[in-house]
Figure 1 (cartoon, helix red, strand yellow):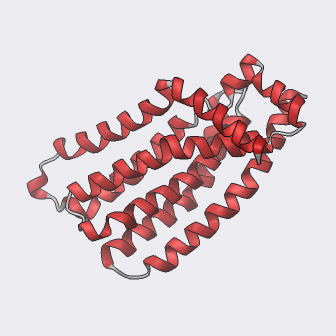
Figure 2: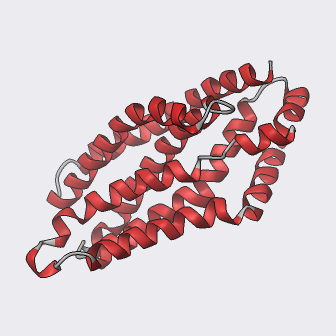
Figure 3: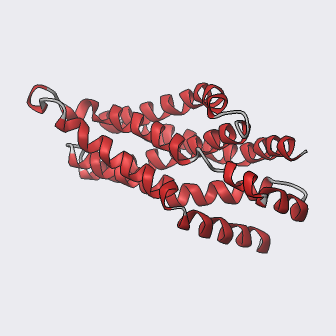
Length: 219
């Protein structure tokens, strides 16, 4: 437990000082969600019906951007190898890093998405449901894209994109289903329970896979 707190503290400090890594995705999310209504004639469209689609696409894009350099910098400066010499494994490192990224970037992005959905006609009573759906989706996407980043170290980002985008499609389908259940007021509890279960499962298994992937780079 002490070791996990130490790693979380280290990763929090590192991410806090990498302003571009956490502020950039938030600004891009705000920019996309602000620019879209301004780029169309909103009098001809029912913005409430398809604004969620823009949020989903923005979420996918910003999640990928946020995790793009998750392990690469640590690999290049040797800190990953140092942690391996201490821990003899990367599981705790990966778990703490994903946890910090979700807290620092994933939750604020979800909050931004929920605010913009409310600003564009979604009922205030649905705010927490939207926020919860987006937060759980970010948890899943950050785990998947972290794997892509670990896989693409020294091999180019395209490998990570090609590997993880197909894996991200079920998450997008789940999020779309959750959003429809919010819009029509039916079946939200079942969908969100499924997302919570998937979140716990992926958060336990994916760090093991990422840890094994990182070991291949060290060896």
